[in-house]
Length: 504
Ligand SMILES: Cc1cc2nc3c(=O)[nH]c(=O)nc-3n(C[C@H](O)[C@H](O)[C@H](O)COP(=O)(O)OP(=O)(O)OC[C@H]3O[C@@H](n4cnc5c(N)ncnc54)[C@H](O)[C@@H]3O)c2cc1C
Image 1 (cartoon, rainbow, N blue to C red):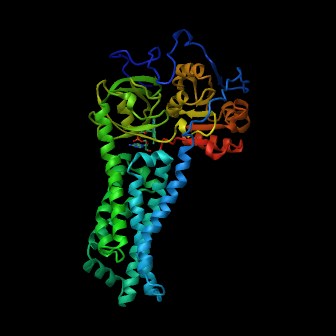
Image 2 (image 1 turned 30 degrees about the vertical axis):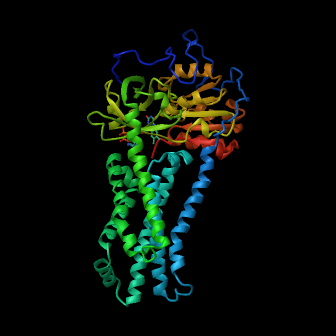
Image 3 (image 1 turned 180 degrees about the horizontal axis):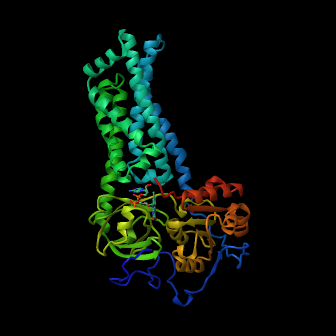
């Protein structure tokens, strides 16, 4: 059980405050108790829906709806176009019919894999640069998924490059592999740093294996992982010194130089300039920490010009609380209320050392944020109506989204017991204000009633028009994958299912 300091230094921004949300009419205390159209599914038979739903189909998806999905094909196209241009110098410089024997074939393979490796490394760094246009196009989780997949491919390609070049040169010279390796290391320019880069990349690749990663403290893993920036630095000289197709004055030279400059500029922009500008402009400080439920608390933050913060409900920031023990770590937390001009709120579940410390934050502590990130927003929707499914701390972005989505949304909120439910009064109030239905689905993992509620039949009973809705899901992995399986059985198209995984 939590013991958040109960004494409040000053009145917190709560309901009744006209700025409680940016998007809703002021809260009316006389209707606070009204339950709107919410109901609880507990043990026993599935109750019938008690009130008819109000669905205002006149609310059309916004112009930007589905923008995230449209961004993906464009990025994929750019990726392949970039790769093609990266290989062109080799194609132009290699005379037709010149690859006649095994030695030439190995060497050509080595050159091609070298160029692919250089390109993939730049893409990897671009994916982690946190430039807004990239994360907005497909979402931070998908960007990270690409980074993970390409990371494995990059390692394979780098090792193939080193092996093929060594085998090819050894065959040309008629030398042993060991002798050729020594020659390459000793007599080619920038080879020591290239070998070092390969070593770092291999170590980072091994540490990315899930089991190894999970066995390490997250922060240690993270800081070791960031050494991969050194790979770019160490490999840069080798690319140009060893790249026979990148001689000064050639297209290859200009193209590869431009590519490197572009990626480094994105990195500096996304990681340094944007966060500095954001934090100098808003100067955030902790306002208050409020207990919400067992091991869950909300952190209210205030600052200057909050109305100018370009964030949407459902997005997350990386939060760095500038106090002893916390300042050196930035952790992602989603906004748990739509941004407004008075305060921001995140709702945190204490799961480890850092989140445990946050509940003791004092008012006035300086906060440094990076973001906003993520595409789990109302602008992603493709339909006029939405279904929101949450469990655990996943209710945080779902609660915020309910403010931003069209009226008539349905919320399924899964929890073990009624004590585990948070934001119950807020959800109740939002159900009223947004003509939404909120269903609390209570019970243990093996209880028949919640299992049934989350089955295709149960979900169809609760949300008969589920296939015509966008579905936003956030919660523990097991609940999310079971719900997605149910939704697919109910023929909800994949493009209508939006996930917000809380794990990177
Ligand atoms: C996009 C996103 C949004 C999130 N929103 C919320 C939210 O609104 N409310 C909430 O309670 N939790 C949220 N989380 C989860 C939250 O970030 C982690 O629970 C928290 O960072 C755990 O830190 P810890 O040191 O206390 O726990 P630990 O025990 O050290 O870590 C538990 C797990 O959290 C993850 N984690 C730890 N540190 C970081 C980090 N710096 N960056 C990314 N992941 C990390 C790792 O997977 C780790 O295994 C979100 C996570 C993501 C990725």
